Image (tube, rainbow, N blue to C red; front, top):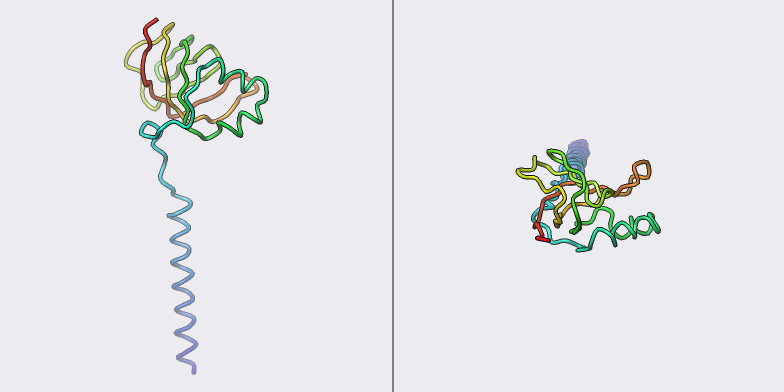
Length: 135
């Protein structure tokens, strides 16, 4: 009888341990999304995207937040790993940009991470330039 209790306790501990390992690696260390290889959930021009956020930020967040979006518009500000489209769409790149896109129309794909009310801009993360559009 004592041996049977020990086997049950050991089995319960092993089950708890395997559940903990599954949770730790399956939930805590979920593999990061590869935005560059994902199909966009939305392809939209910068003006419409900004109008959606300016008219109702909560509704726009419900639609775009954590989604892969393609935004087309004119680059108005540029640094080595950030561009801004139409002054109010902040696009953060994972790598430095190889060439200048300032004052050019581009399509950028990235993950929408929300609206920054302090700077009044929409932020995209993990961005890549999809194409440059000749004006």
